[in-house]
Length: 355
Length: 258
Ligand SMILES: Cc1ncc(C[n+]2csc(CCOP(=O)(O)OP(=O)(O)O)c2C)c(N)n1
Ligand code: SF4
Image 1 (cartoon, rainbow over the protein chains, first blue to last red):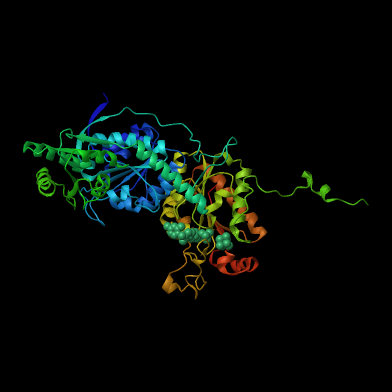
Image 2: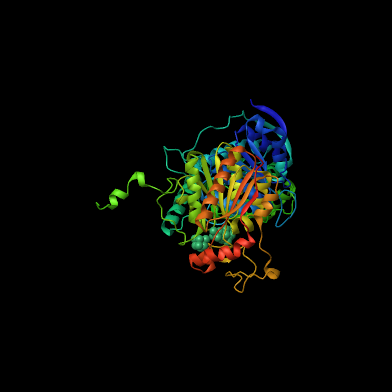
């Protein structure tokens, strides 16, 4: 059993980064995730593991520091919240285009604009549909507990290096701020391996390494895009993750991730106490989205309610997944408001069962 | 007297100049007479002379020199417009034993990337910055740059830069020299053989000083963009001398105390 601690989600991300053997963290303060860098700085990771932690002058600088470090084959990451992640989008696109591994953490707050510092899930589109320019994808992990905040740092780095692709942990202000028991994984040492593609200095035994996303030749640029799409196809094939809760006998289904999924878990209990057989399908990877697995449920359940802290973003992917076979609707709150289990059950009855 | 053949002349002992082996054989895409090629060569020669090939990581962002990685036989990263100092910051901090440089145009370094420039230099990142100031945006076709001189014409100021409407040219190198984190700051040019020699000495210092870990080394090279300026290479160099240099005077702005 690993070390047990009571921690905030943001602190768990920071501690997990040190333990995962991260080489560098570059960030800029923004609520509700500033504890990530604060915890790192207090921990003196340069003494614990030699990890570099730097407060950048902006998210723009931070994401480009991540690019520079990732291009050296180092395990690097940043964290921010919605407005900061918006500012990073050009850099994220470059990172995807140069096929660099890195970990990005978005502790989402409500928007648009400066919005609110309260939790939201309204950056779903930005995370899973692109956000920056060009045809690229982020592997997107959605933690629903402080435990998963820690675990997904490790998993995120593994996936990032496996596919040379940026990975995003799409969390929210509630999970970032709340304290829970977390079992920390045992620390792994920082890697000394020199990756063959990384810019670490051209030694006589190899050609120079170039990290770029530029190719002005249309044919080669298209070929490169096709190669990316092939990689994305492989990720869709192999890396889908989800959890099913009380789905075995379910006649109706909630789909929810992150903080919403915790509310919905309560809603499932409440509904069942009233005799409604409903289950929860919790996507853990938002991209790749568990489309096949959700489609498979259409033979069993009569309708699906997507519960989100947004105006209804994931519901579009659910609709695509079920291909019109059963009814799909959405219920959500915005502006930093978290739906209550009562509301959720009421909406299931109104929009799906009665509707 | 016996006739001397060409073959007799082309002998190793008669060699006075050869291309640095840090320059690849790729043909430069720069316009004939452009200063970029000369600046590349000087840096390549210094890297070769100091035997730094295996330790060098370079960063060239968007601008005419975006394809620098095709010409330099060292590991390189291509950066987003303006962000090279951020990349270089991370590279150097993660691998402090390496030699890390950025090579940036004036639009890149002094407009879109001003924050990254100032903050990297102010933190005293142990990197070497080569700043090519040609007073214009070369790559995108000759638009006004932060460095465009008052009344100078560019495609987005076709009647000349009206400073009351368009703002003043920015002497960012002067600002960098005032920052506590900068260690060596100098302004050079490559428009005459004499200046090329001086510029090379300055680049060599800026590369060597990085080992001292005392802060940012910053070399501005006042250069031409004959295409953007719509001049012949010779006219451009003369124009540079008569107009750019009085505004951007050559010489050291900050030298280490020995
Ligand atoms: C975010 C972004 N904005 C604008 C551009 C277009 N752009 C490419 S290079 C450039 C200006 C380059 O000028 P400079 O840095 O002075 O270098 P030069 O080409 O003169 O060597 C611009 C505006 C871009 N690539 N990215
Ligand atoms: S456009 Fe200007 S800066 Fe670019 S290569 Fe031509 S002369 Fe040089």
